[in-house]
Length: 206
Image 1 (cartoon, helix red, strand yellow):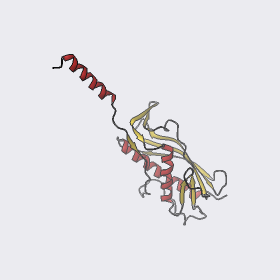
Image 2: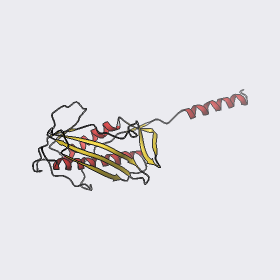
Image 3: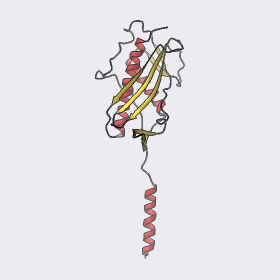
Image 4: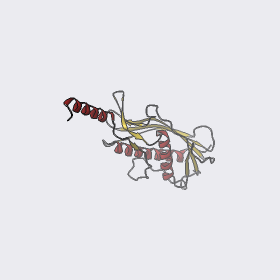
């Protein structure tokens, strides 16, 4: 028969093993969003209907993101100058790569007669226009609002300088779960793609 000391030692060992284990990680990915008539951003005219718009092949440079977002863990909030990081909830790949892939599909959805490819992908066709995106913010703040702040620029026909550029600030109100946050982030990227499509329509040829 085991004595009290033996039972206590076994209980302590089991407790330490339980404390040492962590819940399995959950992985998330951004997804392209179909163009929605409910969006607050005005939809640009189709490529074939826009006067002087001859964009058929569009290159999207890999978006730049802040270093504090460039991590496997999902940054949920920046509150009181502190990052709220979900330790066991991670991105399924590099965030800047996912943003680029998602944006490319979103832009192509909004310009159906154009082909959009990411710069570091397998396609190397000469583009009619190049898009650059600099993401400055993409997280929840003190009030719980998800904010996307980005600078976008369009270079047309090998002009080697921006033909059009602007800053964009978009806000969404995600739910409490990480899935709801990622869905809201995907929605904001769809709205950013709509802004980019409109900028492409306005960018003058050199």
